[in-house]
Length: 241
Length: 87
Image (cartoon, rainbow over all chains, first blue to last red):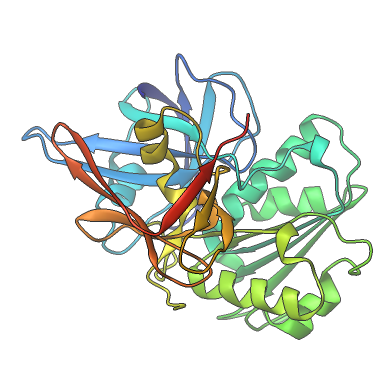
């Protein structure tokens, strides 16, 4: 069923990524990791529909989508450049029961993302904070550059909390003082970052298809149980299909 | 079998819910070709064709095809032998 969400806030996260907060009457509370379908209808009846991950933890009828503008994205371009506070668009959701984590599922939690793949994992992290969970969490985020790290300041704050570790790899360019990883996520990196196999809990991987395949394969080779590795691919371009 | 053109069945969750009337990404399907048992959310989804295609993550065979029509959907049943929904 399609609902009408009204834009109540816009937040620029990076030069190409914007968070859109909707007030959506009739919304049933979502779970961290779920997504929504967004449908735009032109005056001539032409419709375009895309899926976007929810960035905020469960919060009544509030829904926050963090959207990366793609070079040829007819929907992402509209959402990140044209949409204004007070506008209403059609939303369907929350969707998904598979790529979902809540504190009751326990940990330790391993979250691995490429680019805007961090969005559903951020909902999980924010939920952990909101409910006061002490589940240990490690997040490994692959971004092209320091400037393109989505939620960078919030991740720095979260990374300072008990039980939360945030690690970055910068695959394109690095600041001159950079001491972190500076390559694509690989098996050696995962061997350092992942929880020991005999202590490991649920793993969530979200990003471009290539990254997700590489991470899932490498973790399995390292002895992790494939059944505990949940993946969400969003296609070859780094953006939603 | 593995290419980078597909996304996860999870991406079709909204359409599946419209068709089946319930959350389906955690529902489990059995492939009649290879016997693999997987959640719909983990199937390989090809969404850039005129219809949406779900393929088996085990062997790549077509499980189901959903063609959008102005008045609804036309669903072709491929190599899906069994669907289990829980909850």
